[in-house]
Length: 137
Image (cartoon, rainbow, N blue to C red; front, side, top):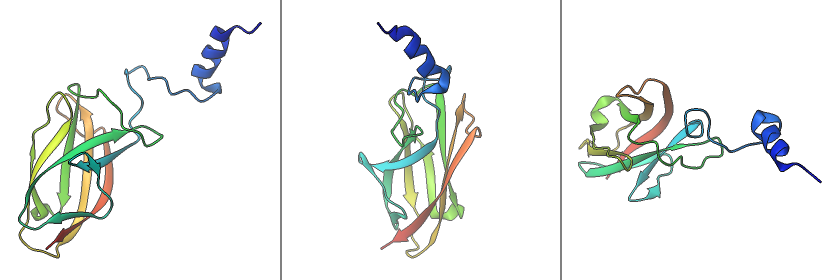
């Protein structure tokens, strides 16, 4: 008869793949994705010139799956390069990482977006990107 407790300990010790949360209470953050209206946005991220819009950042585990429950103990930031591509306002709440954007009025402009991740107001623990950005008509 197998002792499933021993097999479970071996699995979580790293000898067999284990999706259990780490000591920090969640899976390690391995990536990030941008969502708009609940839909994951492809690259390049196309923003409509002069538009106001809300984007959501979802942090991903090593399998590319969103990690739930990171708010309010974690923080995120969006940085556009060049900065004139969009004005960013962090409107995150306990349910997620949300950002209101005012997009530049110059169509055809392009650059990149970087996503910062961290704790206690700091978002310098990890940076994800660059994500190509294009300002469209």
